[in-house]
Length: 367
Length: 92
Image: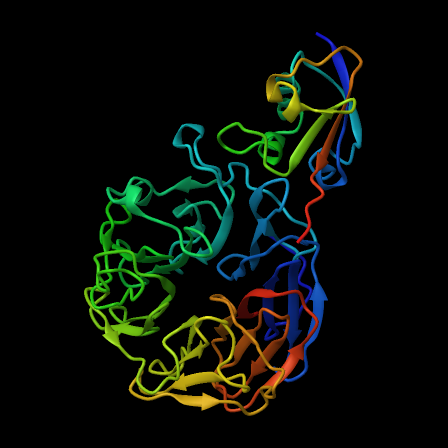
């Protein structure tokens, strides 16, 4: 797979998926940013570069009229390809693809493996860098599937965690269903929701039905997971067998995004919100950081807007970090502002405005 | 088999090799779509979901008649008919 390199090595590239297209922001110093558009103009729920072979750019093309497709580009978004055998449910399944929610490149030592999450909830797998796709039958035919109901955004599989230390183990997050784990390469899936709350259900601690919003794995401790849930923020120390509430001093249990500092693994970030309005609490847009794995949270506001008119929301994939030390943190709002910090969140700047509502941000530093 | 003139919306030009209109043979709309799928693999999924139904916001007109008010995808195609594929005008 070859492509003409547009950018020099060490360029930080942000892929920003929005309601009306995919945009790229690039920087050589994480202070000065250049915004470019791509030729993908539909609803892009998520986009990510696969660094394992040539930085192929994968993106969701969630069309309003003529169908939903996964697409990929080998020229930084100027031209796009469609898979030979794309993401389509079998006609006999009675399922219709609504949206593609998330794309996760596979393990470093499994080049070509890519995973995708969709609505209706399904894990799709490619072993040839996105040219052909198959649904994971273990989830598609889960014995409890008939009892799954959609969240407000749909029955979406929005988070995929591929364990780099164990080829047989993965986790997924499905809205209004919860976290599931496989220990046998996807053949069977068990629920991993113990001690996570579903406050909107008669039984607030069911086996499944929790509304998980985002799920990530600790960068160096593979049994440690973090999730932002509709009803709280949690960590697990045992691969999801049970969860610990780490809401602590946060001002709300509700939020969507979650991001980790890969260089300081007990540091992670959330953007908690008003549960009803789904925007910043009070008049100050705030990112929250913990540096002790959730024992205590500090508000980060230096450079973030405040005022009586500030009502900003961040969707579940709207925040990410880069792999540099000190890590960069990037937050995109559902009103089209993109904020960036190059010092682990201590200070922020607005690096793009007037974008369409931002669905996702992912970051990669070109080598 | 009768041939009809099929007019494509701009959104589908990348799939049709940027041809805006083509003569396509088929006795029903389903036949027309099948013929289009043979020429442009994957175009069926642009028009119909996995269940085979016409997508909610895709409209197909034979002359000025929307096939949804005729026999849907089984609507007969008269020889020489003009078939227009249009996205819905959907706001919000």
